[in-house]
Image (cartoon, rainbow, N blue to C red):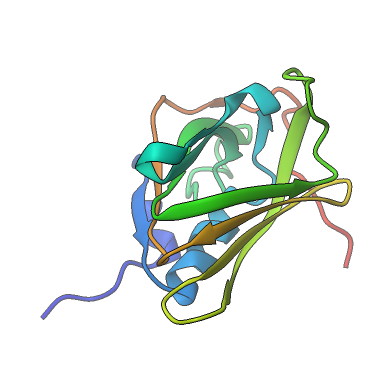
Length: 156
């Protein structure tokens, strides 16, 4: 009998996770909170139904955080079955604009279809219309010390 993956299972290893339902997506959302990326690292492959981001994400799952400075890692966040992409508050034409992910959620419309909402800092959002939820998060580099040497903090 196999058990579902847990947040803590990432530990010191590179992540390679998938989400096929809203509960799984909430785990990925927590792992990419405060991830930053330049607008140039978003890509939508309309013909293939894929939307991808190359993120610099905080390693929230890092069990060794007490022994060293906070770390980030580059990760690919990919969404399959994407039928449309819309955005609000995301500057157009400025590829150097740095965006930050606050939350990823799923709003079901006509099961299994729905909208994936990526909420960004500064009141921005990206909405992906998906035929069915299919998301993957994969670390693609070795961790590196966060340039700020601090973990982001959100006041209660």
